Length: 399
Ligand SMILES: [Fe+2]
Ligand SMILES: [Fe+2]
Ligand SMILES: [Fe+2]
Image (cartoon, rainbow, N blue to C red):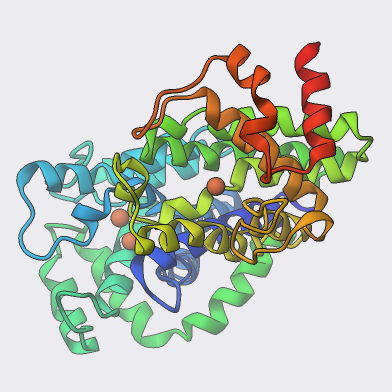
């Protein structure tokens, strides 16, 4: 597979989450990516930089997935501390993306998509030449796309209004000739058609990976993305990796093949990715959950399923995620299916997920000692887990 295809699939997976947050039907991220890659064509960049711009555009607001909903959806003016938190999204995105192999340039672009030519932007107050052309391309395409969409607090801007705003940003937000070039480009280009051509160009020149390298790369990105969950809800920080480790042990013990194990591992890392689109407050609650809260929590598997359906090279991942909160007796969610109707990998994840969660503190209860869990495992997993998997778990725990 091409490195490009793997990245595209996983990036689309996260873009879907961002779309759920913003409540848009069509993607802001994809819109910014299409115009960035087309506009970049006028500057003679290397293919590598063009590719970086494309990835960066798709991921530029990824840090927003970790912002508290209370700030993200606040009606009314933001307090200074809240504004700071919102502004942190570019640095969070940078920190996450720089951990993906070969994405240093992409991470830098993401970090600086809210900088200004006159040094008044954030986070680093870059000035003039430091705010490179590539960085300005991303920033101007972001501004343009944002203005062309409706927001909860304002209608979408007309073309004329956008042009006025862009003209006012000459010498302040952007280098004057960048604004002129962009307005000309915008008025004379069929961006949709042009971007399709450009995307094929950057894709065809991309590196081809062996199956082994593809899997390693896919896993590396999934791990990095799963770190967003811990950024948003700190008590979940180590949860995905522990679930992955234990579920693979269970899978190996019952003789799953390599591909099955791999898909299950990716599902373990991305299982809770739907939480990124949700109000974190529900997961922090100390008292009893309301029926609406429960419905929201149940929905995280469906959001996760929709998002991971973008990983077309691993079609089972989204199916596993959909059903990994089903219970053996049919009392789980979202489908309430029972017994062997639940996909095997989902059943394994259910056991691993419950076992790992029991060990750790939650806002509403203390974590339990491992010995205590092992002694009462049958009680804890009764009705929830496939009984034969509970036996396998006990075997593993003995060793
Ligand atoms: Fe942003
Ligand atoms: Fe944006
Ligand atoms: Fe979950």
